[in-house]
Image 1: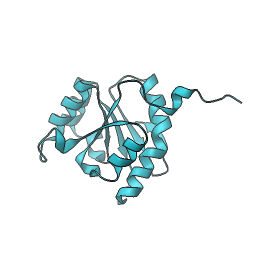
Image 2: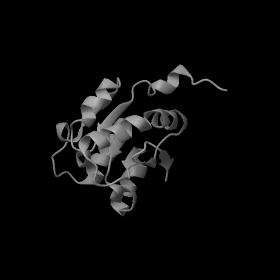
Image 3: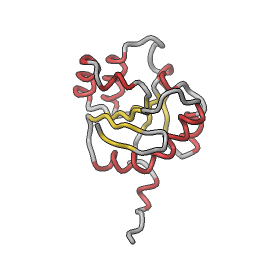
Image 4: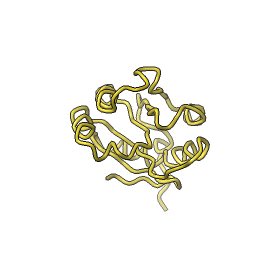
Amino acid sequence: MQSKKPSDAKPPDGTVFFIDRSLGVEPIRTELINCGLVVEIHDDHFARDEEDRVWLKAVGERGWVVLTKDQRLRYRPLEISALRASNARVFVLTAGNLRGNEIAAAFVAALPRIFRILRSRPGPFVARVSQAGHVAIT
């Protein structure tokens, strides 16, 4: 049986997670910070009604990792273009109608797989995150 590497328990150095406004702020921010992650919040950097293509491009160019539940990002041409141009790395929660604590739990459960993907794959990409914490690249 192969043991997990210690690095599997943390993200690559310098990783910043960006919480999209679709997720709200709490409790996901607190839960991710409690996991030792660096977290930025949409409304701390952009107008509340900023177009997705604008913030997505800026966040991708900064190298931040996007956490969202806005599944439309995968299908709209302007957002796809912004994703590609900025090499954005996006993790989309696919389960709908979850409460804040359930959203936080899904992303926390997915963290080991998210960390592996971030180490092994450059952007741009969009990955799906299930409520159970399973992650799949789309």
